[in-house]
Image (cartoon, rainbow, N blue to C red):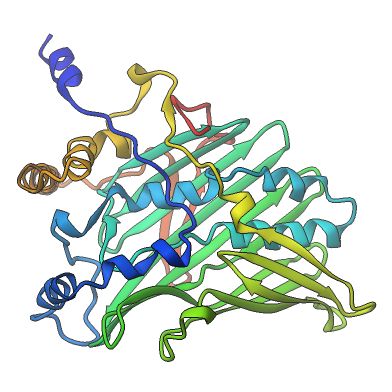
Length: 384
């Protein structure tokens, strides 16, 4: 009876997904001196080169969502069915170009001055979008490691990620390298596409801002096709009209022949140019892919796991959206204290935490995970 009452009182709060921001409403509104001063004050006692994985932001600087949800949204929050396009390509090259477009679609804008919560150990995020079922679990807290498994049995598609952000403070900026490989499997074609993630740069001085940078490599061992995508940051120049640039090439690894040149902006349009005939076409339109995104809904609230992000952070989500900062501070502290209590309990019993959904290993090759179940079941949370 007590458990039923506690479950009824617990808030389970879903929030709107991140979307593409235009120049008119992007970072500019977050560059006020008072916000910059508050951010600078956070890093007063942090030395350059410091590991920030244990650094806790106060709720005033938090988005009302977990990083686990942000990873998940990059997969299921799209207005276009890019995964079906990948699967329906007539040739290996057609499918590879569609995978490049899909990979670009997982890049989402962040706003300077706010960040998602650090997921707690064992936190999950389970959502369905059409026939695509997505499950994420935080399989390590220190260091933070996230595993993702997604399946679409109708399209016969599987996705597997295991990644670890590694943020470092560099004095006037924060650079977060994301380690780990993302896999997309088109099982009907016997093709596996492996790719990494760009690095996140948060510049504090001289001009505050957030951007993605670095090289993303996409490869398909079965076809020998490779893509090299360079995310160009305006970190040093700060040129307003030339940010979020992406350039690259698609080539045949056996002959090293460049088949297509890639050029554009990942928050606008990306084009490819055929090196044989010079024809140019758009392969990705961010406005089309990310328009009209709305908050997911509950299909069945009774089936939501206690470990679900929207459940773990429900009270904090609500407090932040209501701008009740005192209640937000209390809600965040409540979650953190509960986690410390669970750690003490495990240590006193000599127990080791074990993932419920993945087989996890950590060796010289890095963190690796494999799903316990072959497919992801339908979720009680539905993305529209």
